[in-house]
Image (cartoon, rainbow, N blue to C red):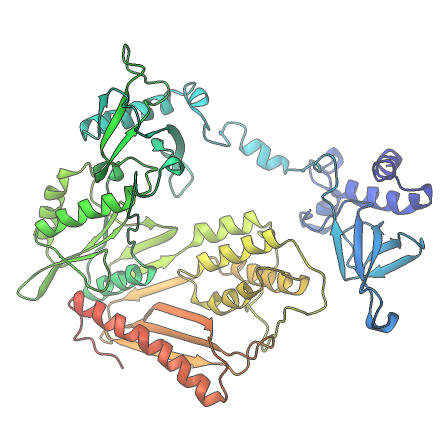
Length: 570
């Protein structure tokens, strides 16, 4: 304990008068470290039953700025004083010593500068996590040299090159003077199943697209992807009609896109052609990493599906419909290289499998997992959730052992950019809000608060971080929540909308919110701040109604494309 205190004082060149604070901090840190006396647990965990968090810890002796209340300063005085952090960081009130006057003060409003350390702080990991990872690789290979030591990755690289040759993606040729030759590299990834087991070892030969020259090596790059609203509407219609949703994906999809530009690349490391080491490859089709590769793939698959009798939706460029005399047989939604397939005609679906053999496709299977969505299809409906993602999020932010709460936000909670509390780590805050926003794909109950918290990404404060942690506690108790689509007699589109009044105290703007239901299942929702300041609550409601009506127009067209326009809006 005294050794730790002496080291902390020496590291920050502090006088010995701070010995009591250093010892106090050392005791707190020791109580947060595992010990054999508690069978590998920390004393805090053994006593209170909760694992301690290290997020609040600050480096002892760091220089920090402390807010000076208005009652202690004049108009021309500085609003902050330079202090030395000289108290354990677990306390809600941190005790500081003034740099110039050596006066001890206490404040909640601090900004601690810890970045002047010569070495990073030691990270303490749970011993249980260490045991669990003893026989598991913690990261994928980052270069060919590392991957060459693994038989699985070597096999994956050979499979990748075999597919490139099979697709006639390139041809070997001499290096031409004046031509831009782009480098390539290997990228490795271990694809896991939902339960964490290994699904497949993947190796991708990727072009270094950052070396491409616009106007020479590429021109157009945009390629559309399916929106989440379209995917959920597809599930809602399938549940209403009693259809199953199936999944297929194209192996090495980008290798099937034809190129319009003349592009040359180096030979891949580890697989140089003997006797032709100085030659290069001329690309006939796209490779991963090319800026135009997604567009080339989309153009190729779009043309092929149109040749097979599908019609592309005018309102969603990745939705394809095959119908006969106005009756929908197949609905196909494309998300890069993944196909979502549903429809009423089983024979048409089997025929679709046959014609798609033009590409190297995976077997047709009932969809169960897609873009972090867990799909459970049963006889009376379809359930969508993100349970695995929510649990992983709790582990990521160390909230798995937090006490759940019943609501994501306190009633009539108002937040401001200038609430007087201390600023917090913006990157950590953004990570939390980004994860919450991704979770809103199936969780409309946190849409409003996630949108509200996203307004403070640039300079988050302790108040906003506390609200975000409250949302995490709510999610921790509701990880199994999701959306249920069922077949029922009320199979039509319905809309609900609302607006608050002066919801934002920073700029007096209001917040609009709306949701759409297909039958009894909600599939589309949104919550956002209005672009203008409404002059009355009635005008705020009208603005919200206009925003929802704009979305209705698109949804009606989508229902028309899917053969469900008869399900009118109520």
